[in-house]
Image 1 (cartoon, rainbow, N blue to C red):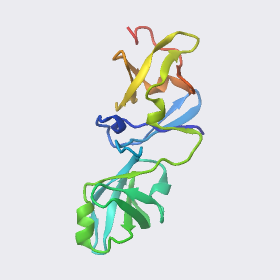
Image 2 (cartoon, rainbow, N blue to C red; image 1 turned 90 degrees about the vertical axis):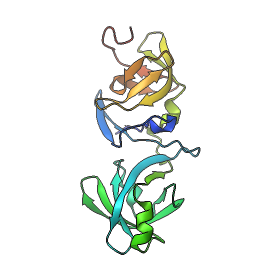
Image 3 (cartoon, rainbow, N blue to C red; image 1 turned 30 degrees about the vertical axis):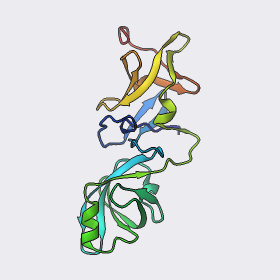
Image 4 (cartoon, rainbow, N blue to C red; image 1 turned 120 degrees about the vertical axis):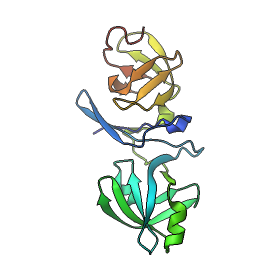
Length: 192
């Protein structure tokens, strides 16, 4: 399965905190939000609230990559720069109870409440990150380029490639990403 990980927050726009899956010609793609960190960190979740008295927190996971909350995983937050996952267990849909090394009481856990958690990209050669898509030319199969990607914008139906011309192209039309982004057949009038 090929994975296309994208995120709009990398460019400073507000993305909805969800991971989406869509199909393009039988290939499954996943979209994950990215943060604006200079290190190209990915936003992978958010601390919702403390859980109990021993420093555990409820994390809403935005990615479907569960290794992000596996013991030993390293996450980053604006409040406590580096957080190492000590324990983790499923709680509710897309939520996990997570214990971090050094966060041993409720007071410390409360300081994490509301913090967005980020992580370094996973080394996966079948994955394309947002920073690899921005700047690429976009063209329909066998046609002239229609523009260059300047951003990816969150949209409930399908995230959108934002072109330098201001035109928006839903990601579900992407059939290939290489030195340029190749689109499948677009509906008449989409680029008018």
